Length: 399
Image (cartoon, rainbow, N blue to C red):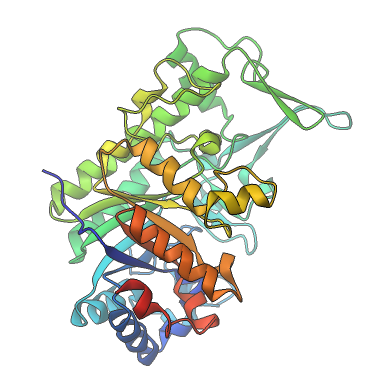
């Protein structure tokens, strides 16, 4: 039986990169939990592993945030950010979900992270041929993406992520574990020899033109090859299989803990990240879906899902009036989420607070809509509540 999260729960994300320096002060930690409690927040999402592979707790398998080469988080040396916030939050009656950024293991900004030592883990991006450049393949450390993504099908990569989850589930009295960046980086990665070999095993034949049988680009427009739909299905199955492994591990060690994932709500284009976050009962009718794509849906594995409705326009009509598609709105994202999860699990419509900078009325409208039409709301991130001085308006919105 699945663990249940209460209807009307209010989730607040506490991103380490944005808040880690401030929260090194334990008075700031206490102020955070006091404000959250006063504002009717029920759950805090606290980073346990950041997008560059570092952990915020003392790990035996991953580098600690205080080991960053430029010393930006030296204040956390010998300390346990996750543990400290967990203790403070529980004392205030708040629940804590530890967030694990999965398939990201380094940063190009400072050349930190395991992916620099384990180069064979790195995603290989394809650079399609263009007028001035030939077809090329580029490792993650040479690709213009800050986070170094690693290949989700590499066995050592998967074992590393599971080792982190094992430490968390076994070592902390958590109320839940969330996965973030449990995906491929984009449509261009991964095109390594390992991925080609396993994809060819999946389809039972050789991809004669690699990667042209997947896709090519013509004047910046993608043109799908004959194996595109099979490729999209295969990638999504890879992510689902990891989600199943992760869930099995977490539940075996802490069966009462919530198991959840954050994704973007833009389902029609989320295939680019190699993810089908819908329920397997949902049959999407999109031009790129294969006949069995629905089998790669992983929502049914979760206790709940957080879907990012990261749009300034709240209602569909607002988006249409501005000349964009109706689904590019909070309301549109909620409708897409309802359709994709197909009533199988709860989902929390989630907001990026920076979208509402200097417009608290629009923010309030978005919060109310999320709470009315989904299981509750997730707010990303607490730093914007501080930046915009919105703690004062939150209690009335979340009551």
